[in-house]
Length: 568
Image 1: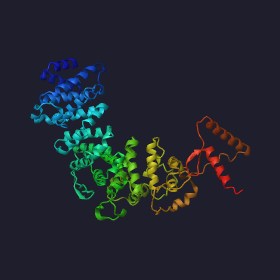
Image 2: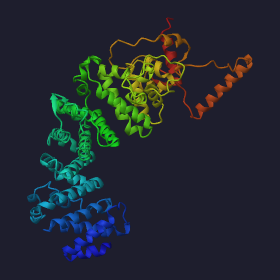
Image 3: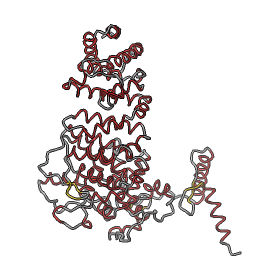
Image 4: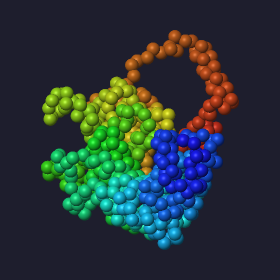
């Protein structure tokens, strides 16, 4: 469809012909996301013309078609200057039902309000336009703040019924975009608009939450149907928005600890639910984990402080179902082998912090089964019980160490997988995996080296200033694990760098003469010296405080200390 003909009809005020041509344009470009730069000026004029039409008292059907065209055009950030203005944003906000008509003067007319059948469609299209415009235009983001668009969204969400799925969905999506793109707006949303409480209420309605305790949601029954697609869409938008709102440092300063605990309890419930597809279930669980990772650690006790099913008093009487779900999620993400930074580090961070501050969670994780492997085993033997010969070392993250013949990173256990991640190319991934294992070892360097070997742990120890050994700053109980007999007998023969007992290697210098040994030693020293002078490598030493420093600095420190200790 030629844009010139559309512009010509719009200028002639022929409403019916304009609507017909716009409808044809919409059909032809419904899947268009890249536009011809040569027609950029025409698209800007078309945006301006559409806003002019929308300000007039036109039929609801014509409004919907105009908004659909504007939504297509708003995919191009270069043509949004007419829309990203106070007047343009007010027109869209009014059609979306976010601003009262008095605030817009004579725009748009009363005729649109008489056509109730199409009013909801107009509102949805206007919200979609606002989402595109806010996402693609920084100017529009600032205008949205100035006209208090977020406040209108919060008021809309307070009255939106579950039957208006798309209105609720795109209202939530727009609120998410504003909270993501305008960080300063987050405090306003929390404190002035009470958005945390509002979104919690939306969560409760969306999921049909039934409270059976102060922070306990009624557990889903085996016959509970999966979360429906529409409810799941709203659920994920709410969780993403709450994630943004809890990013700010002042979350704890707001003093609404009760509200944060309610959110934690609902997220626990989400992790116990399933949706219509496995992919959507994992996506929903991922958003729940991201949100939980923002929560203050003192709120995480809500995850386990509820009755144990069947009345089994184990793990200190704490319910560890959700912790097991987190472990299963972690192992699934590790096995996938892609996108570790976004997909794996949040759950590792959550498990690390919850283990650091909640002893029962740490104890459970350290000795807990990996349900993915158990499920496969049970299905293969068609039983509800594990076979008696099932190897228990597969069931635990850090089991009592018996196998010291293989490197810690070699194998299929959860420990092997986590140790492999300690040398991952992505710094965030390797640090997250190493920190998780370190906390499970009660931040004891000796225990960590026992399970990982010095080579795998060197990066963490250097970053924490623990290369000389010792402990981290965490406070833990003294009930330490006892070594197995197998480990005690093999310990003298374990290579501390690789963390396993190596096969005897032939001595390559055994048959050399003393002169040959001296020659090879000097040759090696010269090679190191050359690499150092060329700044390819930089020899380092360990300070007394366990941190790394240039070798010459550590040598000088040792010299000074030895002179100070000389009684003469």
